[in-house]
Amino acid sequence: PLGCDPSSASDKKVFFLPCKNPPSHQQVQLWLEARKQYESLR
Amino acid sequence: MTTLTRQDINFGQVVADILCEFLEVAIHLILYVREVYPSGIFQKRKKYNVPVQMSCHPELNQYIQDTLHCVKPLIEKNDAEKVVVVIMDKEHHPVERFVFEISQPPLLSISSDILLSHVEQLLRAFILKISVCDAILNNNPPGCSFTVLVHTRDVATRNMEKVQVIKDFPWIVADEQEVNMQEPKLIPLKTMTSDIVKMQLYVEERAQKTQVY
Image 1 (tube, rainbow over the protein chains, first blue to last red):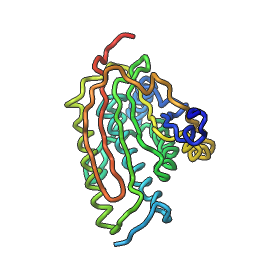
Image 2: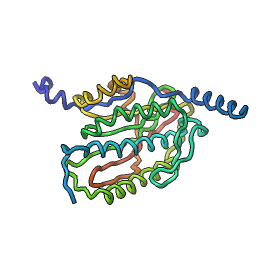
Image 3: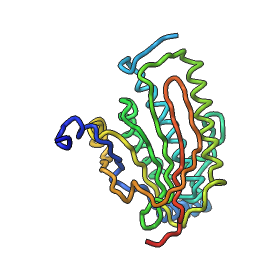
Image 4: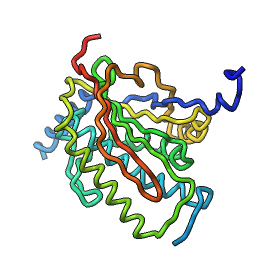
């Protein structure tokens, strides 16, 4: 059967994505605030 | 004029280098324009002779670099059909998908410097389109995040395996929720045709961005 053809299985198109997530908006906001505080102290 | 084939040394690598450098700039700019992150983390730089906004957040920059490092072997072997920057709402449902559709010719007629400067001009036009795309897109809901999808042949992902292990950056098959969008509106942004690559960029935008699931 067509579904068992190894060549068609290897040619199957798939979408891949990284397992890890990028930093969240909240994390980045906290980093930004900390950086601003640090710069104001310098 | 020299004719090179895909098997020639460096051909695939040159294309992958050019595209990954472009995709890095494009991803930073999309994240800025679509306000995925606070504007304070972005700094103005000059790329392709036009001003762009690039993040200075180390973790985010590393994430984008690691992602493209894994995508590069696929582009090198002409196995990446689409690279998609997906912007998702708080519930992780896509609200916008920036689709970079890539195809490479099997043969290349190259005249080095002229060719590369032509490609740079074409890529510049993409950057300019991305930087003004907020004018034609609806605002995104607050608290959005993003991911990058790559559309490839199942067997081609073997090219990624070595890089995944080295970089400790594993990839998985995307599920329905990450790939499909309800009632998308299609917005073509830019198309380019050059001797080394053909590329099309369009946005799929969810009709109801504040939809409750």
